[in-house]
Length: 507
Image (cartoon, rainbow, N blue to C red; front, side):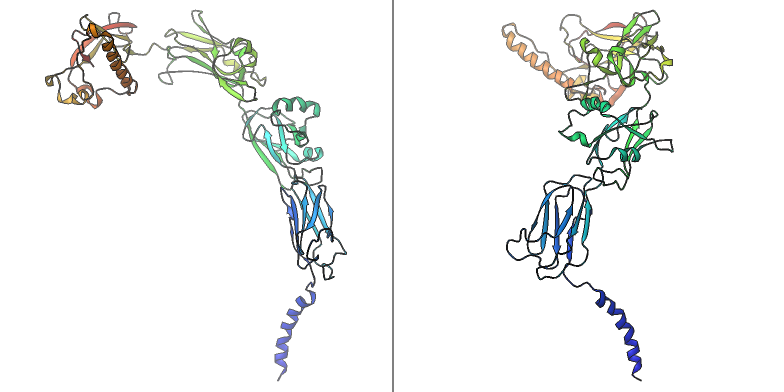
């Protein structure tokens, strides 16, 4: 009857006993840091579970590890349980260090150290810190890449594990590493302001083995397997994204009344390029009218290399610098004759800054045409001063408007009888009076007039002239109807005078 409890208890006893039998008893390493892959390491720290050295100044009494690391450092005991190894400098990438516990190591009580005795860490594989051109740039079809790395890799591992992906191609494209002779002039021009002493060891200059297609996405794959000279290999891919620039083309543009219309003859014409062109070539582009008249090209937006090696934009170009300047466009300045045929002629063999020929050269000479002059009704100034007794007229320039123009005139009077209900808002702003200049007070009066003229000029300067001064009243305001004849016909470009027989402010 007493056997059942013993049978039930026995499996529980057998389940617990293995932990008691195989448990490690004795001093061991509780923590070891760092482990695995860690960037920017400067110190190794180890904590033991028991006291390893006597209290006081324990330096030099016990050296717990055999250290296999290319970078040097100094070891010390921080206290009785904590051991520190300080490197002389932050470890660069591509460093692998191994710490092996000495077999004879014992605790202060004389017990041997048990548990894990081998510890390994590295500062990671060679990685790209920066690139020229920088990621996201538009690149040339035969672009050369300058890669700045955080560790020095082997040429063999680069050649085997670095490649380019090209949009539309399934196969990766291999790379070639430029020789010292090839890369020296490139670094002197493209990298001279970023180079530090000794930095060349961590620079790699590469180029794809085949030409990239234009206007295509390109990826530079810094693949896993790239290995530092200290035998630390890359464990994952690093990819930089680029896009090749569009083909070298030239395109014409001008202002038009609508997309189907010809060019407005009073606005300039432009020929723009998809890539920079030397001004020495661009200055030879001409605009020629059907009657043989020529317009020379002027520089549009330009780029040049300044003392810092950066690009900037500007306008005029000095003659002696022609061959060093590049432009993005040329301009043919208006005005032009209306309703006239033109041709834009480009010099044969026009190339961009990369030596590429014009992809749409078959479109040139390019035929363009001007439209007729647009309608115009323009006063000579924002306001004017007319003689009080001199039979004055208000000049207005007219073009392409009706043969007889219907207009209205309103006089700003001093009396209430001149004001209608619909234009009261205007008279709240415009109030005037006749002011006589006395000969004996000439200087004082002239200064006063100048003051008011300046105030009026400032008022019109800050007035939105796209909107009528009559506000929302439109054509409904009261005023005097009159017509402005065009003696030479509707399309003529002529100056006409509007007679103002009475003194006062006129709108």
